[in-house]
Image 1 (cartoon, helix red, strand yellow):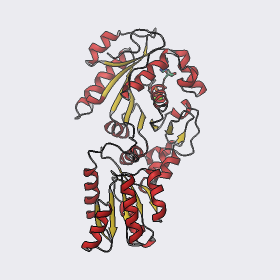
Image 2 (tube, rainbow, N blue to C red; image 1 turned 45 degrees about the horizontal axis):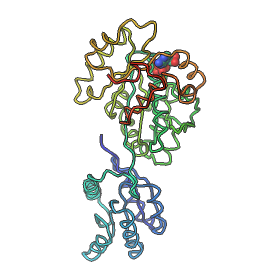
Image 3 (cartoon, rainbow, N blue to C red; image 1 turned 180 degrees about the vertical axis):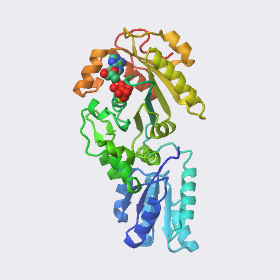
Length: 398
Ligand SMILES: Nc1ncnc2c1ncn2[C@@H]1O[C@H](COP(=O)(O)OP(=O)(O)OP(=O)(O)O)[C@@H](O)[C@H]1O
Ligand SMILES: [Mg+2]
């Protein structure tokens, strides 16, 4: 997936800032993180917005602009700075570069040159993995899709609780996106009443700005943000596959961890989400139809380069009385290790769902919660948490 480059610009002149802004907004891989019309305020804007690169136009006041470049490069030595000026003479270019700019473009900026300059800035920054300034490193990121091998298999329960558990890490900024566009119920599971949904975001995809995107997600007390499915069924048609690609790209610029609760329709939007994910959690149960579908789904995914390898099979409701297949038999049939097992706990799960409260609050010490917490930690590359009681099978990788 093409990563979004988050840019902040400063230009006191509306006349030159406007076209530059429009040019940047037209670049698919660019997210306009912040826009500033005063050189004096920009350092604070940069501190707060932590962009991947900044664009500084010099012409309103060359002296102040060069001072700002110096200040920025002293405070944030890894911050790529692109200077823009109508004065393209050798002296001006040299001054900007000496102050600390990495690239220089002559105004009015031409799209092709802008793209090349941004590409160079990105390439030069390639080795620098710290994504924020002040030396603070941004926590690792993850995009995970949760998909089911049949209806009611536990996708929403796992997606919701997984994301709530991930959101407890204060270094993470976690969002759950309900891609079960018709019948999703992540909002119910979290007892949230959304003001905006995925349909609003999709409708405004061409003129999305950071504020609008952030406003469109509802915040849960746990720290998790939710982008719910459309309220009106007829709005589902507004969400095109290509919109989702753009929305996910932009969400990745704002959130370190994204979890998608997919539909069981295997619609184009579901496939796009899986392709854009680092991990696809395929939820199954020890039951014939579910296991048969796991085999079919894996078979289809294996045909697409790289997709099958992302799949991790999670067996839900292990220990349920109505299981008609053993774990060993299931694993043998699937031909792939079962990555995680979540125990059956009908009452806890149902109560949590009916009260719209995540397991973290409702039954933090329950085996089922401890197992999902363990899954969250494993997916985030963290050391496993000590289970409350050692019950073999539920907390182990296979
Ligand atoms: N580990 C579990 N133990 C017991 N019950 C569970 C467990 N996981 C989920 N459930 C229950 O199974 C039911 C279906 O769960 P859930 O809605 O999460 O599945 P789903 O795959 O999202 O369903 P849908 O196909 O409708 O989207 C719910 O009543 C939930 O409480
Ligand atoms: Mg569901």
